[in-house]
Image 1: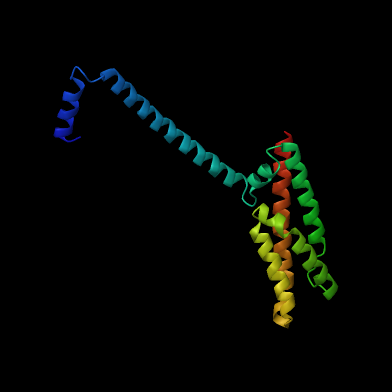
Image 2: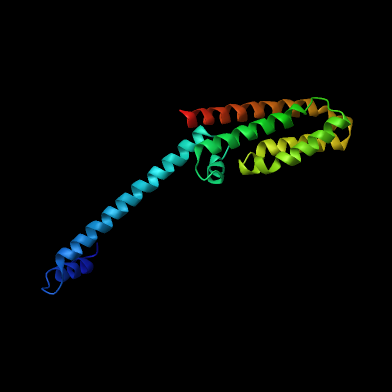
Amino acid sequence: MPKILTSFFVRLLYTKDFPVWSFLSSTRNSLNWQKQNSYSQKHTEQQTSIKHMNRSFINYDQVLALSNHNSELAKKLLEAFLYELETVLSTFRPNPTDEDMEAISKLTHKIKPSLQLLELETLNQKMNVYKMKYREGTTASRAELPGLYKEIMNLHQKVVEEIRSYIGHMQG
């Protein structure tokens, strides 16, 4: 601290009219607040990083907010989403027909809000690329469908495992 400021504070503290204890108390409170705020911020950052480590695909905060933090309702919402996802993905095929694509288009449109709510953009994008490649109709684009199908199914499996694990932690 510069010498001028130090001498100013020393003179200020030794003046009879200055409430020294009040000043010291407010300074201590301010420092404690900064310390608590720093701890709170670090704690929040740790919790956030733990959340990201444990939940790499899905944002459950939206489901909890939607259910008003009622874990039983959140569990039912997630189970309904899993059922809906299974229905959609059961229509996917490595080499789809026109009828398959019509059903896929309808069902993916139906599930899109749920995917957005849970922030499952990767799965949503993969399904959209699958539909786009089919619509292109070229031999090269259709040849990519089996690979995209595998990627979608692998991602689907990870999402299902993660949601089931989360539901299991809600029960336990």
